Image (tube, rainbow, N blue to C red; front, side, top):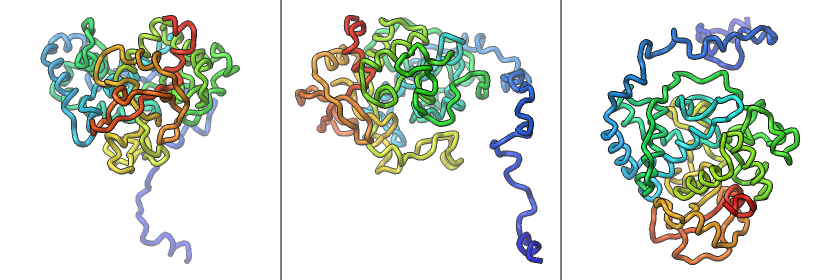
Length: 389
């Protein structure tokens, strides 16, 4: 009678079984041959069956879309305002983090498929707030439809960002075809937690060349190295060794590594003005009410000067929306000391710096803040090979 009373009045429809992802029916037979890979991007599930992007992109009005992306850079939106009124730094980070997942050993990753839109990359700790960058691009994607792929649009946004800040670029190659669901053939590491210690993917973490193949990033959920240092412990020389190995696995030599680091950090900033522990879940884990967004920040406005992403806080240069030699001037012409950001992350700040050389606040130009450098930036200064370049 008690059991009947307990079940009375409950919904007779079963819940959770169809949509839950905790385990599959094949979990009972863990050694069974898994043939899921045969269904990855199967033409039968292609939403654009018979469509050729390479042909469609030939009809794109290139000049018009470039004008629209240029206009976007300084069209700050109240729901996610641009730092200093310019989205350049955000878009460049999105483009680099799209391309930067590439590794040479198996040729997987990279910006050629638009995979940043899908799990797990869309929810990596290193990609915090890039969900906002892609949403800012949505009106342009909607306007041009299938004439521009997400893969092309994300990289184009980074290219135009540099142009709008003064860099003379050398054209743009279209033709990256989108995938339409997550990749299941890419091995990102065996760790079961974000940012698990580097030791788990090295034979000896003090010897970068012992990293497990085909991996290139030093920790699960990072694009390349930990900005605070090896396993989050600052040591620029040790970080330099990891940078060299990681970028070699991305098909880059030392000169290309210096160029990429300096070019990427000439503009934009890191965000860590708040408590990173109170951020909401990443997009894949966030509630449906978040509408595809993740990392909700309840601290004050949760955006603008209160944005939290990497946990480090500050710009690298005096003029973070200008393409110039400010990165090298700042890095090489100052002495640096280890400090902590408001989020508690290790970062390097100048011992002495003139007030006029400090970057202004992203919202109030009457306020100036110290610039900062990551451990990887300091590696460019203390490693003799990088320093010579």
